[in-house]
Image 1 (cartoon, rainbow, N blue to C red):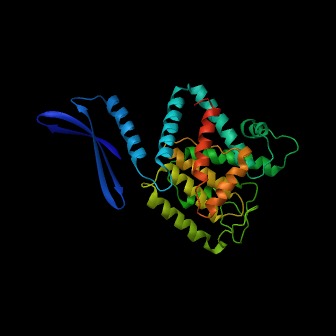
Image 2 (image 1 turned 180 degrees about the horizontal axis):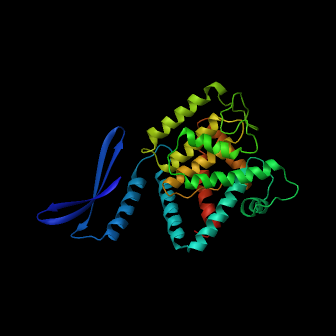
Image 3 (image 1 turned 135 degrees about the horizontal axis):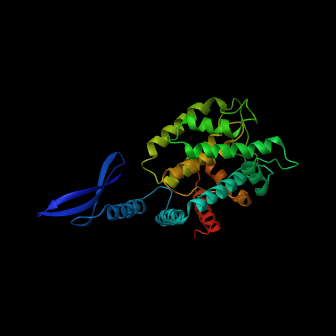
Length: 305
């Protein structure tokens, strides 16, 4: 948390920005002088944002290099700046396009055969393309509903949110399993990794939420969101829908700190799955650079960079 502090020095008003945060169990206070005399709220707000960015980029992180952090912060600021330039109508169109593409790609990654155009017909016009299964239609509708729920959700990450998203993802598809942890073992197609036994799932999810609460004010938000997503899919708590829920949670956490949501392209499915499988073994060397590159591609596709 950064706040504005006024100090009297030799009878003169001195302005400082102060950050007070916990670091390795201890409170760490950092101050920055921003000028003498009276400063406008606009000046203070602008300087505060700059100071907050400096704090993030200067901090050492376990999985991100300084170069990566700086790149992420620049991408974030570029994203925010470009969104502010959009008119209300342009912003609505951007959201509609982005979330339609996100729904298409997230489902396609899991084998759904709907094209982007067909996905748009389903989620935006409530039309049913010919030759597609009911399951595929509901997967598109459900993912769109899950996105709507997340965008309106004001709470924090918890077990209830994970179960709620899963119940939405599988509604009208598999009511028997929707919003419920698996009761049997599962295998991940194309992978030698074996998820934990079903009996351990509730405790592992509890451990994951505890880990999140312990680290959410310590880690870079991109680090946090990525690791939660990978850890969740490694637990593989559900019979079906693990990948989609994990990506929804990742984007929810990114959005909490104003980072752009990530639309993982189906055309890069093999690269994504390779990075995830490495992550299943707690090797995160591929997933971070892969996702940073994907954010850049997302922003380029919308003409933001």
